[in-house]
Length: 228
Image 1 (tube, helix red, strand yellow):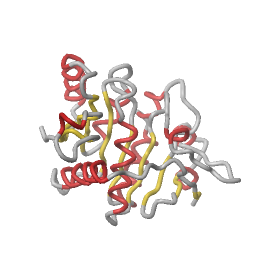
Image 2 (image 1 turned 60 degrees about the vertical axis):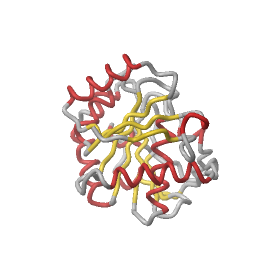
Image 3 (image 1 turned 135 degrees about the horizontal axis):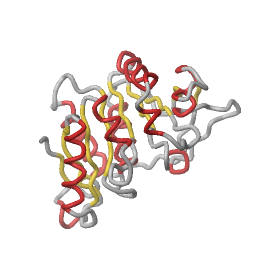
């Protein structure tokens, strides 16, 4: 297995750490059948990738074997944000696998976070929707479900593109990340309707970037999470 270092990991303060622990607990209480969770948002910049990453890290630190799949094949921020070092051996990613250029063992990477593995995007793709509709993606989900206790998928925002709506029905649940005081109710309602039309199960929403004075004692980063 490839090994990579995540050098850009933030040391979370108490409030943020407890927020992600609460999110982790809420997901666990959503049902024993929840094993693959998709994160998306209405627009870029709402914090879905950070939320997906920190939830995965929280689960790993609790002792679960987890994997994060970076499925934003249009504009991934994972490598730059977490200053990922890929070592001397080139690491292939999700787009390599989905296009038939790599096998599964080539794209799964162990990280310096205990119990946490990662699949990176690989080269950005001109036709990600077709790749997500493929049998290879279905097979990937099946294999990862068997190998890990939790699979977290970071998908592109559903407002501009439909990738997340294609992936969502293949997962056990979807969480929508919403930026406080920025994303309009109308946009959220439109995205929610689009997800519902895909036939997926919406677990709830994370209200992100909430100002401390408006959010109570420990909800600076994570505002609220509610089941539908």
